[in-house]
Length: 428
Image 1 (cartoon, rainbow, N blue to C red):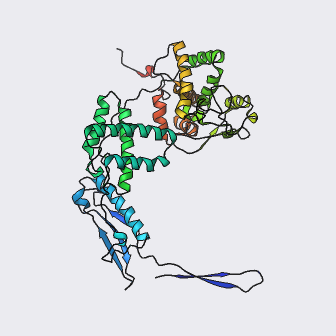
Image 2 (cartoon, rainbow, N blue to C red):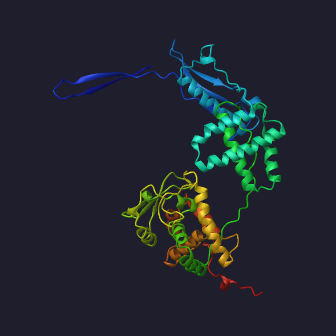
Image 3 (cartoon, rainbow, N blue to C red):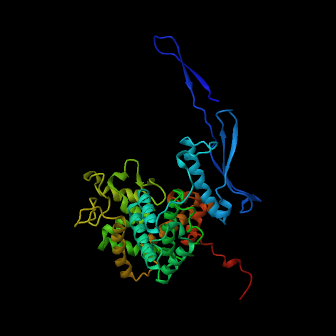
């Protein structure tokens, strides 16, 4: 039943006033998905359904409402049932908020859970148009290219004009195999899979389709080539070369080395992101909208030499000219894309690699790895235990977990054991 809350308020020069607030009765509980379980794990055994409690306004009694919508008959896997069930929960939540009464024979607004009649091509283009507002500019371009590739394949294979509800996992698996046969690697194939899964997920959320057919397809196993760290001697030679041949690239790489930034994070920096008073950088990272990064003395000296007070806060910190400023397409005047800005510096580093004969396993990331190894070893040499050294490294490299940091340190060779040769007793 509705509750009455009395609030007594004393106002200046007046008698206390009593305000009666009549709160609105809630006639339903939050819809939930019932998931049968065996030994604590979801199972296809048992009935899946959405349920909620609803109060009958005539007799003030509560009734438990169950809605199955043929979940068991239509979907055969736990993942499919969970996905469709969550869509039902969202739909019933919205309907109840809008006044839907499940005790009436007539549904409000003619509510029927059924697929909308949309062609494959039209449905995916609609989903992309709705999703792109959530994406970064670079991701929008990538997804558009991948979607166009898929739609061209769908046209050639004859299913672009079929109802979106008729497109299943077989069609998508065939496309991914086609991409593999064209010579693209596992990472590229997984990127296509991720794009299509997100678009079908959007359609499933909007009840255009009943489930996402991409989720049942496993990701391809990737074996990416990781950058090797440089030795201290190689780092010294690279510095000498850059001082003589490309001081602007040296400045760029120092942000990677001393602030542990990714190259794309460096090209995002603007003058306004620098706080020399508190020795901080505000950085848009891979996983966060903004992160605060410490400016160490080596980097502070570099920033002070830039005379940043002479530039606008919106100017990019690093540009091809070697000084802060605007970075736009000279022909169109449009801002230069992040991947183009990053490529500017990676192309310049290629000349460094060619000069010293470094192979494909080396890149700008190699410098970042080199400094991570150096810093970790310095902590150990100062007497820190491995755990203490890892705890010091965690906020510096900004890994989200110790396990992630340990994997990283292991990959770059920082977790090398001490010489154990003297411990052998076997002569061989």
